[in-house]
Image (cartoon, rainbow, N blue to C red; front, side):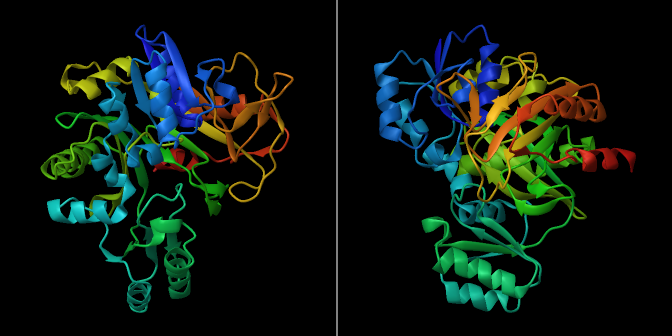
Length: 422
């Protein structure tokens, strides 16, 4: 089979590496891919949001199956358009992708179907939002309704910060139309857990839990990023919590989407917080997370492509989905200055024997060597029999990579190790 994977980051590289293991995969196209994926797929310089060009490429090339990985093209309806052209596709329809595309929709869905989440209010008028933050409990969370490249959430510690967040989103439109509506919700406390799941709308199979590290600097300091590293499994996600999540969150969400006429088929991501009152939903995503995918998929012992095809066909209950009992750690190497301004074009040297280095932001130079071309550049992943072993191996691999203008957190997994000690 010839497979087309949409996207060009570390998540897509992890997906491509995994489907390469499948005997079903013959040739893989990556649109657009990046310089570091060239050894694993044929990179085609078509952007993930250029839907017309993607569809035209799929029609003019022998594409047997498509995997749409990023959120934007899913929310824009790429899966629908490919399906209409007779190309089977992994990824939810536009109607279902709204679960990530609109935070207001997802909050109202949870309220309607009794799925535990933070208390909230929705505003389309900036003055009404300002009046609300005058008296609401502080700290408070302000969220742009639509997609904002993972940056549309501000935790306001003071009323002034909350007002500034409302102004920047609703009046200054720093996130464009995504900020025309905002959700203001209560600040929850507790450890965060990410759980990806496969679902075809009838069956839902959670993957291994993981712990993301959003802040740029050690000690969870500095600005929020797209993620500076992950470990799996998440020690806070106990068997008891898993059972509650399945009964109170996972299956009810799948059923709710069916009842709304928005059957979800693809990877449904649950961002959770384990509060004193039990697990609650912080956010839904309509696709694999990044960098969570980089630790979850290396632990998958089954054929990813086969699972995806079962999801598309609506036969997930017939698929074999097994994960190893091992642990994994991913350390992100980013360009100095990320997530703000940073330099591009720095030489990258990765030893050939490091097999789980996922390239997120790099290009091939005229000399055939690899150079940095983004904020998050590499995701260095290693497996181990324990979280501690996986962390040690990941950092040992990081130290073998040359990236002169790169930086990385030195404490990925520290919270997980502390949780295991408590």
